[in-house]
Structures are given as C-alpha cells and as structure tokens.
Length: 494
Figure: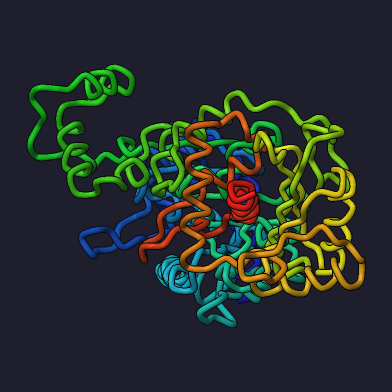
C-alpha cells in the first residue's frame, strides 16, 4: 500500500511540474486544461455534473497568464470556476502548497468552497482513498495531510484573512466589491504571498475608483498581466431572435468585435433588462465599463475632462501626504478646510484642503491616517504657512477633539465660527446636500479650480447609493470630497 501511494504521489508530482506549460503541447491544450477535463467536475446550468472543459475565456487566460494577473470581465464567464479548478490542481500535485481564495462576502466564500469540495468529491476514488485523502475539511479549508497541502477560502470582511500564512497561490475574487479599506486588505494579503507565488485579482467593474480600478490602472507599471474579457466571449450569449436593422453604434461594434446578429439581439435584450447597469454587467471595453458602472453623483464629463488636463503638483512634503500647487502669496486670503477621521492606521483618511478665498483655487491638499493631536498640529502648520489662514474644522464626531487641540493646546486663534456661535463647521442632513451641490456646481462650471488628481478620483467613485443617499461606494474614500465641499461652502459665506 505504501508503494502504491508513493507511486500515486510520484505521478501527481510529475504532472504538477508540468502545470505551468502553455497551451499547444496537447492538441492546443495545456497540461492544466487536460487535467481539468480529466479530473474535475462542475455543475452546469442544467444542474448536471460535467467535465471542466476550458471555454474561450479560460483558454485565453491560460495562454496569457503570468505570475501576477488582474482580470476585468463581464459577468458569468467562468473565470472564478477556472481559477478555482486550476489552483486545486496545483494544490494536489505540488506537495506543501497552500492555496488561498478571498471572496467579497462570507456567503460567496462558502459558495466557492462548496465548488472546490465538489471538485474533490469527484476525483478518482483511488486518489481520494489514497494520497489525496482529506483530513480537516470544513467551511473554510480542505487539508490533504498525505502531501501537506491545504486549500483555504476566506472572506475579505475577515480582517485576519491571510495573516500569518505563507501562500503559494492566491485568488482575490470580486475585488471591486470588497467592503472597508480594500487597499489595506489587499496589501496585507500580498504580504502573505510567497516569492514566486501566483496571484489572480479578478472582478467585474464597479465604478472608476477604488482599489480594483487603481490596480487595473497601474498594472502596466507594476508588471501585472492584464486580462480583459468582454461579454461576447461567452458562446451562450446569443438571442433566439436575430437583430435586423442595426444602429450606427451597433454597426461599429459588429465591425470592431466581429459580432453576429444574434449576439446583437442578445445585447439589446440585456440592455433593456439591465438598463443603467448594462455597461457594468455586460462589459465591452476596459475603459467605458468602469465609467458606466456606478451612478456618479458629480458630472462625469466634467470630472473626466479635468482629469485629462490636470497639472503635476509643484511639490510633495510630509512623506508625500502634503501635495501643493500654489504657494502663499502676500496679501491674499486663504482657508484650510479640515475633515477629521477616526485616526489610526486602520481608520479613514483625514483630509485638509487649502483654498484661495478670492478665486476658490485649490492650493494644497493633505490626506493621511493620523491621530487627533497630529492632525491639529498639521492643520496649524499648514494654516501658518498660508498667512495664518482661517481653519475650518468639521466638528462632528472626532472634530470636536481636533478643535480643542488646535485652539486650547496649540493656541491657534483664527478658527471658523458657525452661525450658532460655536467654533467649527457642523455637517447636518440639511447642510450636507448644499455642500455637495456647491462642489458639483463648481466642478461643472469652473473645473480649472481643482488641481488634485486624488480629489477627482474620489469624485469618480462618489455615487448615488441604493437607499437614496450619496457617498463613496464600497472600498473607496470621500474624505477629500467632504473637505473640499466644506471649504467651498464656507468660502461662499465669507
């Protein structure tokens, strides 16, 4: 029996050493594609079990994948299934492997692990009773003690996901929908990835801002392989009724992507049912799908136009947290708008915006994770730099503490006083819409006032929320937006 298991292990390891081969060695298939079809079973849309045969999207990913990958895709193209299957093959053929998948919700994590359990349950019986016998198996992990390998699935909502682990394969799913500070969560997970490990970041779009958008935008600089998969790569996305007369937009799409009339018929159906979400769910190109996803509060064309012509800052200081464009000029008046956050490395950013009172021009910007006293000290330094500028602190929540530090402990006297006679600005259900409306009007009418790329990026991801309110979508920040909106509101009343 020992020899039999050793023989099984030897064969698995031999195949594991070939998993990185590209398609072409086996009649256009890679070893991973061959093994997936031979060993793995998936539940199809008909509810029956089928062999995992690579579709067009999965074959293209297999052809182009690198050590680090980012996948932007339309919905339901099978990428999550393929990465799960491929990583399981690596886990069971390469002893000592730890694979980690991170889903955007706990429910999604459990569904992912159910799929992996199904893969394992339908492996050949001899392997399951032998070298691939499972030990610990629960809603978070499957352990293969004979080969010291493990497959684990976590939720991005778990702050300890990946902590203390050394991971060889990592798949982060629906990153654009991760709650909380997705950038910090991803940074912690990346720290767990072993040198030479494989990383796949994958998501449908969800607004032109946030962690996934920034990862996609910077992929060329960081060496991450980009993969974009539009909806028409799914063979089943065709209508029974073919389109007849085509619009000009449809003719251009047919010429560009080589679509047939049944695909255009399907596109029309999806656009009628999904309406404003069609551009996000049925992605057609890697730029417009971001802009179409999420209903922006601010004027999209104004924000995009300003981003195309934004100048580089004149300088960066304080460890890069302070960015400035226009220096102090004697005889001019300035204000510093301060939006305090909770502080600490796990909190939101605190933000400060420096405005020229007469013109409204953005002169400088600060954003960082700091405690109350440090924010008050930075606010005083910045105000003094701009000729003892008027400091406007939002007094909600932690702001009252910042105000006390600024006035009582640091002795700064030029502080904004509200109409109620109390120091600081109070954001209320009545004042917040007026503040944001003022910023929206300024962006549309005087976009040249704004010089910060980071502020405009926050404007991109500031959306109308399902409950009827407005704010930063999941994974994004609005600290600069609120500081600027407050500064413009105060300026209008001076």
